[in-house]
Image (tube, rainbow, N blue to C red; front, top):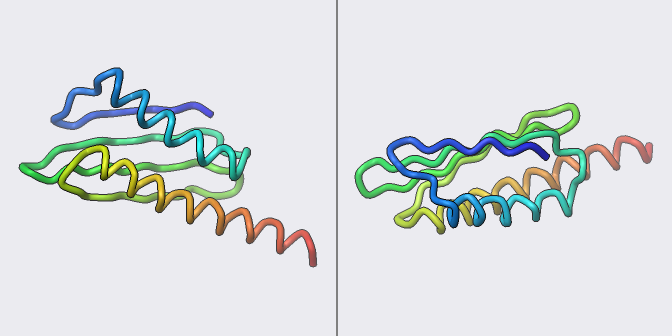
Length: 98
């Protein structure tokens, strides 16, 4: 999986990059057809925003999260993406069973 990490008004530290990479590996465990991910981290006043576009076979999944802390925003983002990936995988497997 190729990961693109961009920061708007925030410096992407090595620890932040490692945290995002570690969290996104969870998505690969559930669905191994993820081709690439584009993650944008931004700060607007006191709001920390994390958004991601996930390219999987046959679909693009998008999620975003806004929290008071950047790490909490990343956690919420990965939870949303995880739900979407599971739903996408179920659609594929149900379609093949019929």
